[in-house]
Length: 333
Image 1: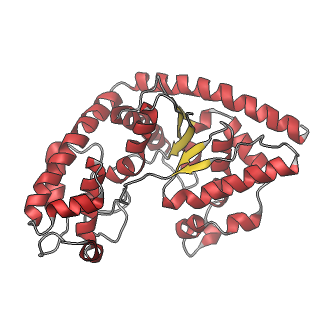
Image 2: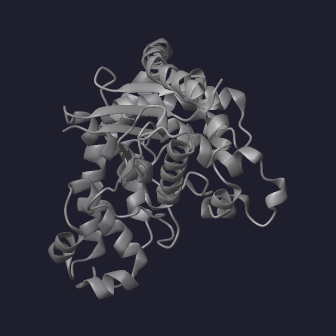
Image 3: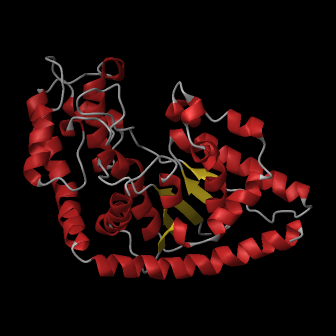
């Protein structure tokens, strides 16, 4: 039996290899399984939990859609839309915010990390956005949600909110309690300059990441300059775990080639880094260059991207508006 899958991506612009291997590549596989129903949401309401430049945000929404399509997500098979244009998301977030408990939200570690030391200056949106995330998922009766390590806690909260709503209003199984979809054989992608830090668009040096809009020469240059150590490639897992940059580059290679890390390690054990980097570069160029070219081409046709969003908004609205009406009836509006 197929799954009903909901996933959201923030329109931050400049999506990189970490976003591709950590999420988008998995979305393409899920989209290609004919038994699955997939809904991919550009979560622009989540984006404004921190201040955005309005022009940049508009461009980033289109760029996220272009990246989905260039990576292989078929808009005819899946629903692709942006969250702010389906009113049920904001309505659902308020209603479910009245079901969620402060204690639950106070346990969310991501808020503590993002707000930093001065929590008083963080927006209320940044604090309560896991409730909006729960509304996003529950409005579509999603059975499964692809999550990375940093979102597992939010999905647990979503499950708690669904169960409490169902219990409070004696509406058994009305809100579908979703299951997590954890990606197998995936290594977390770290910075090319520091194997202890996650690859991020906010890192100052562009050499720290492979952007999905990078061309062949940029990819070659970045892997050439990627941090390594003077020793040959590690020979076993113990050695690999002690050498973070080697582990990251081997993890990237394994994720690109859908190989187990142990097998990649065995294939390159004791070889020179220069030899491994050449092979890694070839894999990256083969995978990323076509995506980069297609993103650039799609971004030149804004009306095409807007049409895809409009079509997705109509389809999403049909589902979400019915669910929110039922929610309102249940709570007595």
